[in-house]
Image 1: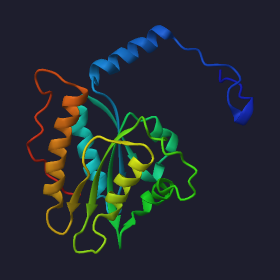
Image 2 (image 1 turned 180 degrees about the vertical axis):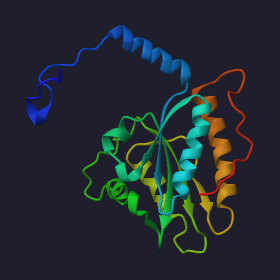
Image 3 (image 1 turned 90 degrees about the vertical axis):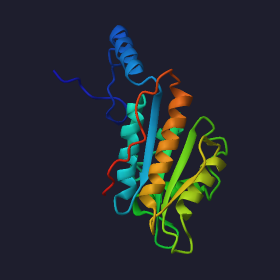
Image 4 (image 1 turned 45 degrees about the horizontal axis):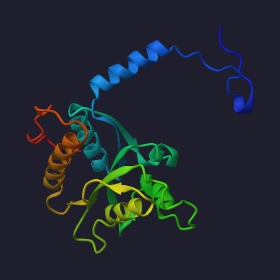
Length: 208
């Protein structure tokens, strides 16, 4: 039988029963499968390229021992980000230095124009940014640069230098070089072991 709903906002009036033993077993299994811990990969994409890169990065990080969640910036929630230990952003610049449509709300929040977000809000979050832009435009990779700057301004800890991919010539090569370096770096930092868990050098076919 379904539980009767009540209380505030239709939340259950009774606390759910939690089997501590089963929870511990599940937690231990996750630790064994993902010894490097949790990671969030956010993407801001207009044509799908940043999304494809985010999914590809996530697949390599999972093989390196991370429990990865890929998040569309259109679904961005500040509370979710502040609880992230490690957050990687792949953000495209659209038009003359603008955020993509799905990243607009995130960018407006990040700018903190009203000063309502304390500058220590993201102090427990380590982050890295890969920007996708086109050097034929004046405001080349502006979204990536601003995202990197403003995450730090809200207290985020930059764990890897900002990288910028150039869609006018070498975007896929730029992403491949960055992916190889950052996965190696993160694997060594969060899951140091004697033998590397995966071979991350072979170039995957990128067609998005």
